[in-house]
Length: 450
Image 1: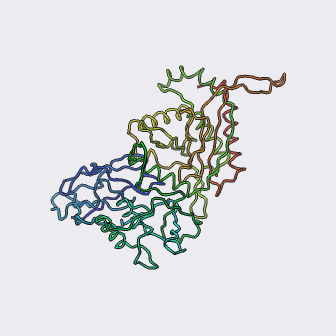
Image 2: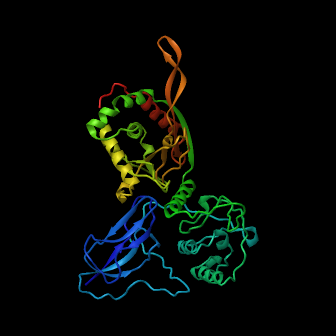
Image 3: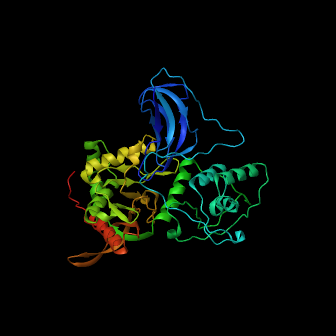
């Protein structure tokens, strides 16, 4: 019987890797087609990986808690049920783990920005120091900081650190025979265009602190999701040239309309109507006018996304954030948007989101007003080029124009902000789009039927 590869599935446009949480099967177990073999997790969602064929689990190539690239072979299944198992869990010497570069079988569409490091003055070199993905992966697994990695003498071409070099350092460190590392070290950022296309390097724009703490402190280990969120946020800032514009909206008509119809809407549809679907409706109408806001960058190409899939940042009970996506939001009426928003928000908070629920977003909305903030500067959700934040709605005394002249009235006011990628969206377009959303909200029809 043939051996069938079980592949780490593609979980989203910007997701490069996933963590194996739990294997439900072990080598030698019989597996049915579509039966769950393991649980995996990304920064966005936990998911189950089913078997693509019926047979016997022949070999497991990664262990629990391993971080595996998308498209890598994670297990082998012998099709059929009468084949003997020839290999079980991968074995490795107790003193030194095995590290192998994963074999990718499909191209990942989005690559996070590359990072760069300027060697310290003590090294006496001015050239950039580059590290392969394998070396960086080993460093991450072994808890080796970039300060330490920079001090390792490389034996590879041009003095680069090889797999052999870093494993030797890991062994020396375990025995206590390794050089001391300075607690703080300043690193400079070098222009991104100085990086060769086939190299991966590492950068830091801040000081690195290692292992020295004083005073009355409490140390909390980041959970898996928070570590991944942190990485993606730094990747985004290093990828996109962030610019943020602000606008002030008078949303009195919208607020009064919602207050007027919300009870009847819930009675008729069985759903509570929040402000989120109303904001999404205004965003969709504005993107139709300015489609570049729903795009991504691939090298020197701009990919305009015709399908308007709006992500909505949703807070989880543990404080982390997840972004479920409303697919084809421009094809839904207000009732449809409301049901999608509520269903996805509930699924996120109860841990029932599916991988497809967080895939394919082309523009993101984050409602920071739900936490009391009046404005913010959100970070772009890669590979998108823009994200909009809406602040808290506050009553304020405002000067308004009437046929009888200017007057002061109490109005419901809200700040909105747009962070956009200045590589392709200039300030004129970003501000014009934001103003278009503002006008959609301000000119909301207060006599609209449901």
